[in-house]
Image (tube, rainbow, N blue to C red):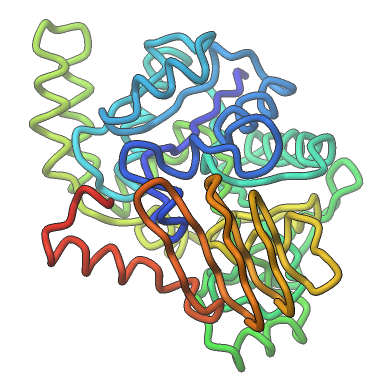
Length: 358
């Protein structure tokens, strides 16, 4: 059975503004190392499968960026979403195109902008997830072993039902839960059977299509209309016309929260979704005062700050727990406890018709 992979790369990375912008979002930036996040994702997956079996779903704005950054990816493996419609339509569109090219395949689905330190361990877990998914009609997800009570992630609760595959524990999922408040997150950490939802899924293509038909019939009908147009001269037009009718719904809400036959593999492989600026504290070395410093910085009596310069000198004195990011046209100054709310600034920019800063 062929293994295929779908990388979701249409997001704008708004919580990483002002470095992540509409025309160059987070997944195309060098956040850690000398490659962009999407280049790192591709290189990682090529240790498992051939580039011809890797697909990237994105929007029209980023197709040329992908071609430039990943020139060896076949152009037909770039799947363009006419409009943004969340992860369920993204995965649904990819599933029918992959089914046409690789019948009876097992599909790995993952975001384009995650950091994974232990790539060898990650590949072993993916191989195990593929084996579990191929063995029966189950859906498999990777759950990150939580190291602290994070409120910015959804969680997966496992049952006591488990099996061992390739020396890895595979647990039956009880339920997916939404992002918790602080007290609830702390209780999850203490319970020991809750895992961060990585957004990485593995399933047989025909199985996810079956669940889409059962649980999201409206979307299934739209996908079937698209599939009927395969090979026709107006295929691209059909995709454009039909995709806009898709429900704006996540795969978690549409499928994963409603299916019983789901397994989670607990993981520790140095994972981070780099969801906001505070992630830099987890993936970079801190100075003696707990700061992350990048670029031309002069700091005195500065503690637990994240400061990034675009070349201009940034001098700080007597500050704590701030994020300061300087780009060519924008300087962000934000308290660290508001890092998850940076998108509010973008909303205000849109209201004030200052789209040039987006």
